[in-house]
Image 1: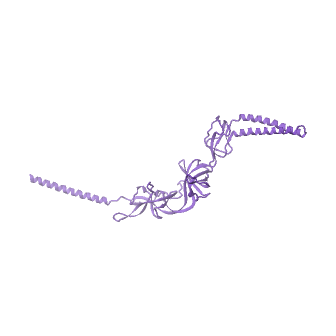
Image 2: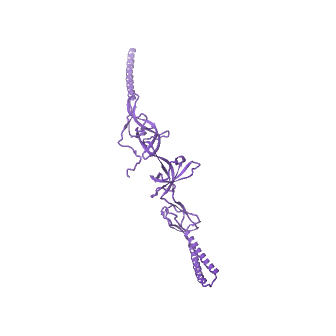
Image 3: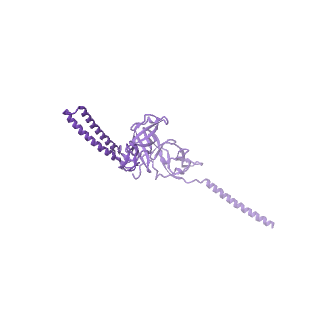
Length: 376
């Protein structure tokens, strides 16, 4: 019995040893296979880092203001008799906007005109009598003066009536009216803002060291986001302030822009790009090639890389770069990249240093300094 148990235990031990050896060999083979496995290459598009000559520009944030802009107000007190404009619509220079009640002044005008007519008759009669030496010179002078005073009184009342017809001081666009029919207005009470929309000014500030490169008549481009549509407009520098702000050491610059469609509104903030008239050589790449990050911007450069076994493959290396200005789809690289190097232009989010890549440039992102919409 004892011998039989020893034989069975030996057989079981041999079986377990064989099973363990087989599993050990299988696991070692799997580990060896896994260590030699490499992920498939990522498909990307690439672009060459080309050298380009870009005009040196200065960037700032500007504010749009009207060439002519006022809040039209009442010159004299009175009750609003009629409103002759529509809020938000164009108005012409001299157009009557609001009429105040002038019934009292018109009654006074009728009386003054009657008094003037009587004074004129007396003055004409005195002229005839003076020629015949019937009246004294002093009497004639008194009657002539009374006529002039009556004429002046008529003109004064007419001027008062005219001042109660509030007119647009220039052509522009009326804002939202601030008065209602029948409302009593004090002298100086606001009625409606009127802004001249074409042309308009854009005011912006530049550091004192940059203003010396700016000249009157230089081109200025502004970019605004108006209703979700980006607008680009070109104007001219028309004024440079003669003093420097002591608090900021900036100089105020004013540019004038045509605005026939009213896309630039007074008070709107815009991005300003002013040319200095100089140019510089830069390395231009697509903006889509840049991986923007708080710790630094980088690009992935394509090249031949060796794995630990010395085998070469097509891969990428991450490289940090210093960026300059932008032109359309392109951005300037100041440092970190050389002319002619190939960078990944799309798919950078899925890459890491040493990753293998497969280039497919059949469909590439935009890479033009002056892009245009496809439907234009």
